[in-house]
Image (cartoon, rainbow, N blue to C red):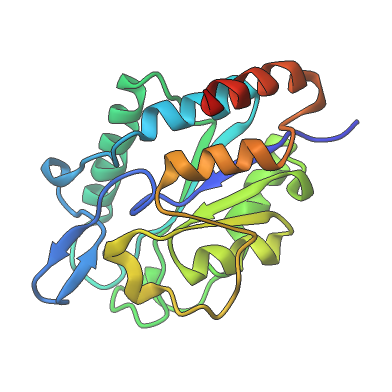
Length: 213
């Protein structure tokens, strides 16, 4: 029996907006609950995938605690806020995994190399085993080269979101299977490119037709 089809979703720049970090002079992950804002159209886009039968999971690098910028409790609160806002849109992810490590971290228990920090595929492989996911039928959706690398290493197809605020994390080192300007466009392309579960083929066809109207 084949496993489920999943869409692995990076978080910042895909599900929620980045925020400008004056110290880094770049857009980065939100570190305060009040700064969390969903990207426009995310709820409707994920709803299409849900109705098509895809398993939705989040896999996100979150190294701020390793760098000493915030506590792990604060990172957890920010992620909980993302999930809360998605729930208001009727979206409930099957699971989430956050990698809290960083090779140059200053907090000992979070410092050093790991198997979970993208582009390593550890988070995807862990969720695939736990949720009986067919990686070959699944997608990794992210806005950085690291996301594409993780998907390739895990054996999924990949979609790269050209989010403006994370352009400094895209250097065309690895080419994705698909590109999109934002998640709603990306979801339309994914559904158009494949069938998410043979048992849901008719439902997917209806979704594709709806998008084309």
